[in-house]
Length: 147
Image (cartoon, rainbow, N blue to C red; front, side):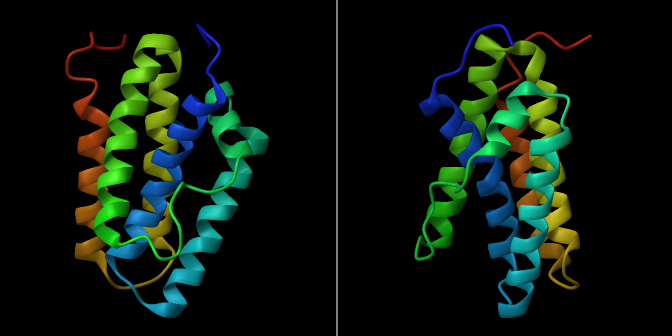
């Protein structure tokens, strides 16, 4: 890691990552599917916490919560998550450029594993993943390509 990240910055990275899983889950709201998806998210984060090669991903996975409550409206989850993802990538490009790819991969793995956790909702979940991918790439368009 190039520079140490503050707890506030780690919270932003966490909000983007965990929010991505929540955004996919909310895109197709079925009661029992939400439990399966939440379990998948928790399992994915626990695995990253113990075995990720990325110091930033391990730090993000150590915390809890996405900064969204149970009653947060879906449109606020979407806008807050996408903004946090764009800000997170920009922050990492500035402070820890060697961690950008790992963070992007971690977020997309969360989103895709949550989408695969329960059958159905494929179009809605794919749309949410496309928005997440766009947010992760938007901040990187001004940066030089990675080797």
